[in-house]
Image 1: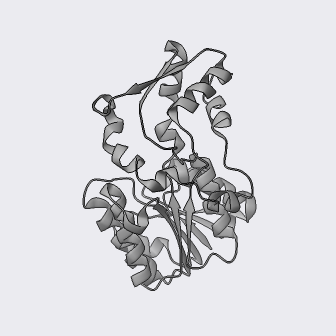
Image 2: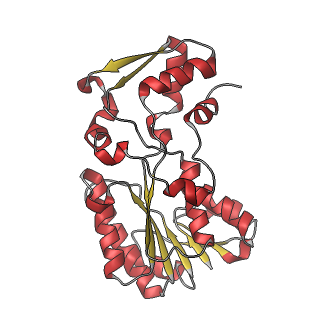
Length: 272
């Protein structure tokens, strides 16, 4: 049995859809705090189980019989919340006798800074619990740094304004990272592996050029001062770490194809 947490989120939904295209739906279970939100999976034969990251007992029940568990990291990055919730998940997985935990970790987890340090702690907890594991050190989502509203505004005004990073950004689309997780869950030979999942790298000036070509409207790049970066400012120190400028082959290998090119990603955000 493959059990998936976070199944109703953006990442988990893609994973489950791919899993039930690869294996019989009856071999997949999803964990949701509100099972009603996973009804679409139940209607297709997936076992829907209630589980709350703040309720260890519910997690132990939800993880029962799991040969493989996709542990999707908690979304709440408020200091202290994710470590508490992740500790409960690891303890529940150990108590339930989960055979193999696939954890959605993050880039820099070998020595994480800021909110990424939670992944460093969680990886250590999984190892200390003696659980067979695979760590998927996911890069940042392209959707977070190239959101649809940014693309629309750039095409409308003819200008893309963003701070200088000083190196390419090795982001990847959510779907690519989720499909890599599904490949691990259904594949062999991933025991106790660590995968650094990153894209090929792009820059905001390159994004402006891609937008110009894809939209047919000239878009120029304007460099913003860090103080003018708005909500993006708090992650700039992370984006300037060497790891965010260093591509790796792991994601392409797991996908069996190239990571979705920036041009293709951008065209998906533009009006038809």
